[in-house]
Length: 142
Length: 77
Image (tube, rainbow over all chains, first blue to last red; front, side, top):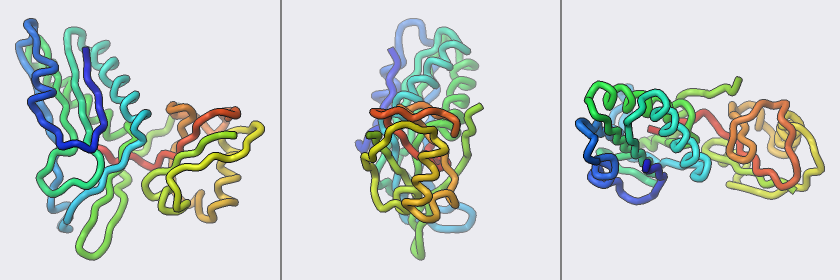
């Protein structure tokens, strides 16, 4: 019922929007994470994303299951792109549907926070004068 | 034998994405010791370890046939 993928293909929002839409749905939130040109005054030329694909897809599936436990009645589709991405391209799409809008907003935000914390995906910023793997948040298992 | 995966900055240190090594038995901590001897500077990086696609602690046992990944701080999204 849910859809989770990590792919080198261009992400098309409609695919995920349609996937979560059905007769019980009254609201869909669609989040797109976009490649930004300027970060802290530094200009990015492009990004390279890499993933541990089987584990990343498994963890996205777990995030989806968590969301459905916390907010029954939701449906979730998440896609993350890997490879070389240009400025303004879409790196991640999260679609969450629900009978009412409040839960669709909350669950969508929960999904992106969990992805940034847990899912084994990495981005490298490439600048005019160098490059760096971005090490955002560190997860420590208990 | 166990199969190892390296990603992002760790992959650049080891200069390989993956490899298979001989392994009788031991913990994650013992594998980390091996990695630091094989790739000087390995423990200067930060990472979590996943065994068979699950995050584990350094006390976790690694058995022949397992897949072990070194996961640097993630930055998806």
